[in-house]
Structure formats: C-alpha cells, structure tokens
Length: 115
Image 1: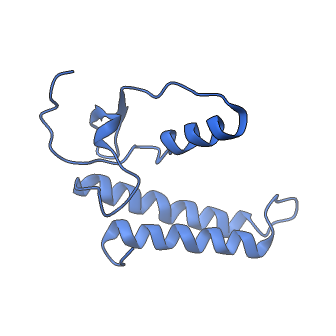
Image 2: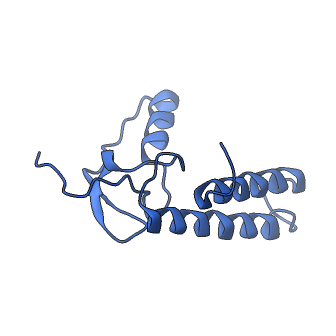
C-alpha cells in the first residue's frame, strides 16, 4: 500500500464506528464484515481507515474535529428532543444520559473538555 501524503488523523464523516460495530457483530453472532480500505472524512478527504479515530484526543485534523463536534451536538439535541416523546424506545432518563454523553464528546472534540 502506498504511503498516504496526509499526516493527520481524521474522523469518519458519518461518525460511524465501523470497527466497533464489526467487533460487536463478531462477538455476538460470529459474523465479520469487511471494513473499507478508505473512508470519507469530516473534512471531505478520502483516507485509509487506519488514518481515522473516534477518539477526540487522537484526531489532529482541525476541520474533522469541528465536524465531529457539530455532529455530536446535533445528535445530542435530537436524542434529547425525541427520547422522551411517546412511543420512543428510550426512557426519558436514558435519552437524557445519551444526550449528555454526546454533548461531552462534542466538547472534547472542540477542545473544551478533557477525556
């Protein structure tokens, strides 16, 4: 494989956790999906999956950090709004906890919080 000229660590555009999802499926069902060689990032680049991280402290691409912070904030708002609605599969307290976790992750990506 050729060396990628971009030295930065990025975040996947959709904030998917391909590797973690793959591990969970393998542990639960014995199924293993093939991971993509390259992914689209929050800054719009295509980079090898190995050049991405879901941990804010490892992401060095500033546009990707901004993208991830914004996505986590928006997702927190959606969960907080939709979670307590009638018919939601989440209990209100679970939705509030999930929203708080995503807001904390948004702050970490923005550099406003520690781990």
